[in-house]
Image (tube, each protein chain N blue to C red):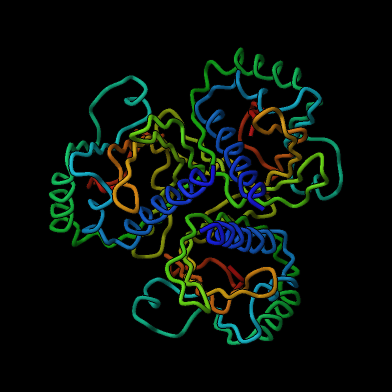
Length: 158
Length: 158
Length: 158
């Protein structure tokens, strides 16, 4: 039982680290939150519920995440907005002995360079996480957006 | 002391489950979060602070919650919006041996079918929860809205 | 290890109490969350990252916080808006034996008297907290706003 409590806090720390990495624009560290053979997807709730595999982002390895970061760095020069994630209501849905199914609610606020703030995205993470050394990593992460509109030219990590 | 830690995590799981139930539109399961003789109310901060019993929703039994879900199902056909709750800052204010007084902050984002997102509601839950088997249930839940405007024709659960 | 779990929950309770104090407009209790020789600052992410000491608010003692509350009470009569904080993703970044470096994400919603809600602020707390009796207090708190615009005539506590 005590192990479960510790695990719970470790998982919360995983999401806190994840949010912090994205919000601080330390994108180069972002792939480290994933296993090498991870699946990462940003998709809409409609597509997710319909079982459609397609997504706004769809990557099937950590290497593809690294590639994406490099693309964003090249393209992103003229878009100096900031993002702020709030991730809450983290729930462990299943533990099958080798991995945990975890979901969490998120909202992302976008802050433009002139200071204007807007609700950029909200939704639910549907994740599969595995132990990796002293911490945990995402073996699979679906960022399921409630809205199918996403107001950006660039598919940034969520 | 360890019992308190476990209790704390159980209560967080209660709110996470509650948010997940509403956001996934599994309204038929929503009454299960309450005791049979529960009191559930959605009210404004102004009315709450003035001690007024009236609310946008006021139910005094789990059966009334079930009735409300049935009414919403009949009426709701033409309103396919989604909602996303973020519940945070859960605090146990009092433990009188039979029940806990718990408060928590929430925001609810509404997502229209065309993808438009807006801040639908924010406020504070003022709850009384009791042990029920392995988990906890709401014996009383006041969803106290900061705004007295609520932009909906239907009084949906918060 | 168990001590760390308890500490974690105490720190979450500190932020929950802090949010509750501000949202309930119990500003007179707000300075009690700080040590006597605290440093409290509200600043923008740009200034914070540039290492600029200036802030929208800059106080170097609990007494200055008390003075600020008194000023706000005198000035605030005609601004009956409400605020709602959501503080999430609390992370303990460092423990040097005498104090903890803690960060957390926040959003603040403002609710005008006519019921209109808007995203008032979002950002990150960069805090230093120390044990004080049975609880914890802020020895230093930087409320780092993502936006450099803040839509208010009055510098209210964040």
